[in-house]
Image (cartoon, rainbow, N blue to C red; front, side):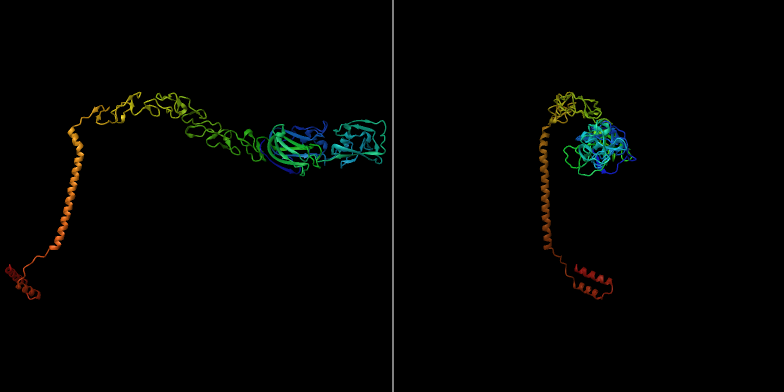
Length: 553
């Protein structure tokens, strides 16, 4: 059974709401054992009559330590609440109608016995012929427990006659008229004006009850919807909110080992009416809405509509979501296979919609290619003749996975090793090839060793010895020449720099202005005249100077 919510309420008797329906009305009812076969039919608990008249209620047999009543809802239903009306038997039950029992009620469960054969005369019974089994019927009529009646006598009341009728009850009859009976030949002997009194046992027959909901008649394996604490008070009107699913609703009680002073000695189920409110399976809530479409078996939690479980491929409280990308199936537990380009698979069955990635096959792409095949849809055949195991290859790429035969290389073993060539790579490259490497098809050398030449390095190159000598000394000669030139240039630069430095020093020390001849006194006289302003014209002055210069020269 699934998880449920249960709240116990002692309140007035609950009838079905406008939205919910009474799922128990008119349904089959079974009890542990009926009180008798004539009255207290279990079906009285689901007939819609809420009377607490003892004869209109169900009642289980006396003297039992366990008792139960089960309503079969005919199919699994979404249950919201369970309510029932207890008859109060053993503690506060309504006495039976004396018009039916011909027995005058005693409300305390302890009093004298009086009955009538007609409505005009009251009688008491002959104490000597009225035993405990007969007294049990009287206790039942009064609404008290028939288990342990106590008989006693009191003085006979005035105007009360003895009945000549006697009874032979077995104890589970409803009224005295159902017992075997007869008539005494004479009035009661040795009565000495005594009257019969009976004290009946009382006790709570409801306290300690429990309610179960189950999918099978084995109700003890179902959900315990409610368990009453015998120390807590409980009225005859009981309502329990019990949100769950199930087909069978059982009210159970036990008196195994109970020592509580207020309880009955034996277990009884005295139910007058049971209501099981809820919705048909597949519905939930106050308005009985349809359960989410992806709930397993179309069942959901009664209050919120949450699914108890989701159909394959769905998740979420109300199974409203597809499985997350990369997962599928029941509870979205399974991972998708190797779908093409990592596309998500179908969220329900896991099939790859766009096909499989290379190297995989099957509807779910969870199988490797068969031996000898590879690639997309596994439609390529492994054909690696030079692979050590040429019947299998990498299922994705088709590469050789077991290594190549000698002289072959490459992922498909289609290439020769660098030192071999030919269709079968069984011809060795020429020893004259550089590193012995050659073209894998033609065998042509990529380069030659030493002085070899030709596509196979088959030719020897002729070399002039003088040229060879020159070639061998050329480097040294050129280097020496360059070094000599460098040294000469450096020497010239140093010498020249020293020379310039020495010349500059000599010029500063030895340079003197040239001596000019002392001017003639006549020239000085002419110059003074010019300075003093005595010369009147330039022509005369220049003539005089010229003459002086001629003389000097």
